[in-house]
Image 1 (cartoon, rainbow, N blue to C red):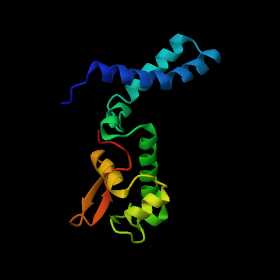
Image 2: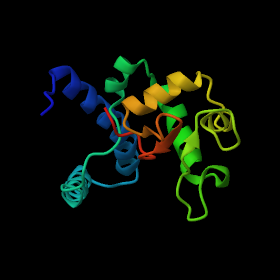
Image 3: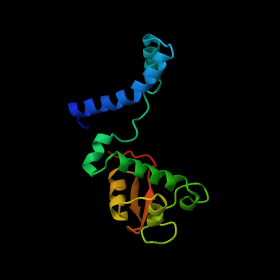
Image 4: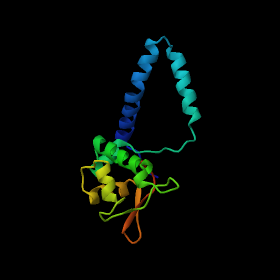
Length: 151
């Protein structure tokens, strides 16, 4: 089980605060009471109490050399891979991409997503995040998840 430091908790609370604050402000200016807002937030939390936590904590990506802009680039890359007709098969599933420069290759995906980093570095980052896996003796790569979920 992963230990959570006080820095992680404070950072997580900061992210939640940054997301919730403008919503609460809009609701309050619209005339909703604090009690009503708290009640609905509690109800919403209960609704998702058993949902698995997905995604990544931005604080945890810094060890991989990822800042928020890079995380956004990687998310765009995964979205293109999972949705663009060039990178999905006939059944709508993401294709396994070759690591050479062929059509529908990983390099072609990087070009399509306008990804500035080298393909090897991007591949390493996606592997560290648990989004991709090498296959076919390292000649191709397959998409495991179109959600950055590994940290």
